[in-house]
Length: 256
Image (tube, rainbow, N blue to C red):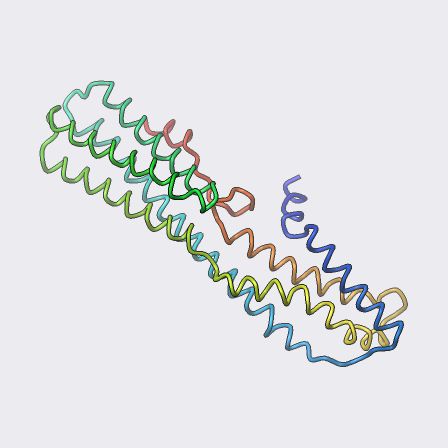
């Protein structure tokens, strides 16, 4: 089932529409004997190179997002250990409180990154509110005997968590340039149609029934690359196989 799910992520309705247009263009050119020998290097220069460049950029952004997400979890766990190990006989309610604060923070991060950018102004307020609650919680640790040096270190953990959040937020906000996406979309639709005369010219060397094999492969490959780039574009939308998943329950469960 997973294999079919992955296949349908890169082959979708757009694949069939553009493939149908390429076949129709080729059939039209064959019927009316409109033939031309266009250079195939134009395809690589105009479409394949920009899409592959975008895929590489999107993948790097995803890797940075994973690093920063790991930093948030690691420093959150360090805060929990500060409560558990740096205090002499810490009250159980302190452990519960830091767990609740961390759980609320990760849930608010999930809300930010899985909702549309248009809602960012509202969803990020909850994140900052949770950071504020953790800061106030660290302050209360002083009254439970936490030395000032350890309290300062705990604040550094919180500061690094906030830095990581801001970096992930910028990855979420600023993606592949819209003009490059528009450029790719236009040529992915246009080139399989424009190249109808080229496909009609090349069928003379193919056996009967294979004259549409090239336009079909041509369209499927281009759209598949575009779909791969689209799924990597937003690593938080929970639609692709390579998305970043914020597993709040597992993180909280494994704190002890």
